[in-house]
Amino acid sequence: MAIDLSKMPKLGFGLMRLPENDGVIDHEQVCRMVDKYLEAGLTYFDTAYVYHGGKSEVEAREAIVKRHPRDSFTLATKLPAWEIKKAEDVDRIFNEQCERAGVDFFDFYLLHSIEDGNNYDTYEKYDCFKWGLEKKAEGKIKHFGFSFHGSPELLKQVLDKHPEFEFVQIQLNYLDRTNPVVRSQELYDILHERNIPIVVMEPVRGGMLASMAPEIEAKFKAKRPDKSIASWALRFVGSLPGVMTILSGMSNEEQMEDNLKTFTNFEPLSEEELAIVNEVTQEILAIPQIGCTACKYCCDGCPQHISIPDVFRTINTLRRYPDDWRSKNFYSGLIQRNGKASDCIGCGQCEGVCPQHLPIIQLLKEASEILDA
Image 1 (cartoon, helix red, strand yellow):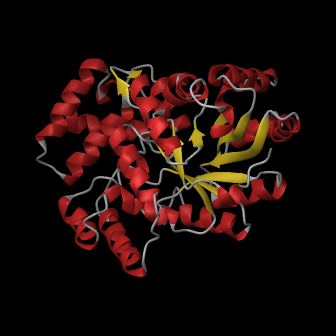
Image 2: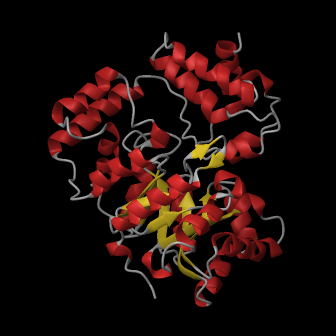
Image 3: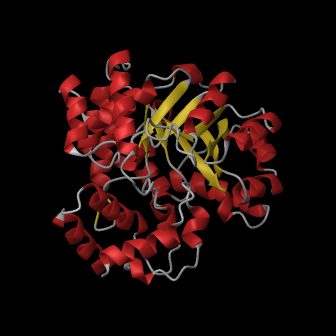
């Protein structure tokens, strides 16, 4: 049965940043988080073939599918273009995903990360658009969409050529509205004008909008001392018309509880609150930052095993707090388990999969000069 996309729960549970212990997903904590989420009347779980090195879909099976009735939740996953080398791979990957997740169908299925160049070309080459409609006709997919990391020009091209898509997932938060790479305001406007339901990813920008410099946080707290810093970012996106669901990659029970508090009796931003968000946006944009969202796509194929997002997180923290000794201690512990920034051999694997299109090789060189000196 088709789902009324206009009545979807606003908060979606993203399974990309699940809690871990020593690099292994903390299954017991995930189960508790899943239960709290469902008890709150929420239903949308989002995973992908590549999340947690392929373990996220398996965790969805163990924590959700095996423990709750199939009609009590909806599950979304994605087809990765970079894993498709021949036509047969499309069905192979889909069948593997069904087995991993323990389901006969997916409520939502997306072509993963359509962007200018390789990914979009691959989906066209193997006619994944027609394939998705065939799977939908078979009942294997209930709703067909795509996640998008490309230009507004490409978005218009895809929508014009493939009107069959029912929803689109984009990166959207108050900081990226004018980002010249992400251009999220333009993407939002295109989708909203066409009445296409929007799934939002990175509403808190990988945690960047959940913790800020004390003087910036004080502006939020002065107005709403009862609200968390992260809640402002979620309320900003939740206040926008046309947004179907907002994905939050919750990494612990505290984040889950805070998000449930935000979306229970949800309050859209007032004009005065939006003015504060706009003021904070300008202050944050004045601080140079590496725009990494910690998706970790760059990590799986790194031959030097560099935890690139953690390196960039360290640099970003030092830019805001130059004397923060904890950041350097964090890096010292990090390189006991992973490669150093200076270990980068410039192979470019990371840059080929980065949704933010960051010049990672050069950024690692700059980080090395600060951290490995």
